[in-house]
Amino acid sequence: MIIKTVTFEVKAAAKDKFEQKFRNDAISLKNWETCLGNEVWIQDNSDTNSVSFTAVSRWDNQDDFKAWLKRPEHIQHHKEQHFRKEDSPILKKSVQEYIVLED
Image (tube, rainbow, N blue to C red; front, side):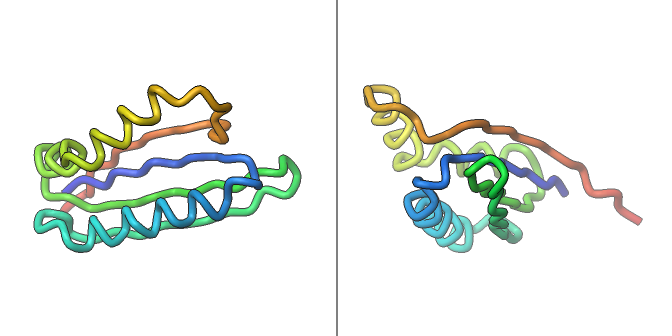
């Protein structure tokens, strides 16, 4: 089993927008057959006037995760973001993968 995490640190003013995005992603993951489970964690960073959102998902293997990333609405969202001229509210993004130590 693998655990995938993605953390976005965003400007505090974008909290509501990103909270809705992560709620939608959590619903998508819950309904995705090969996702074994998911959670979203939120951390207010008052010292930097930012908010961190971490999505954690569990998968049997890398191919199952990649299939979720390749869903049409995800690809379309990234295409739309690429063409927007506005300043991004994202301050930092990090992605991690962990392998679960089995008995």
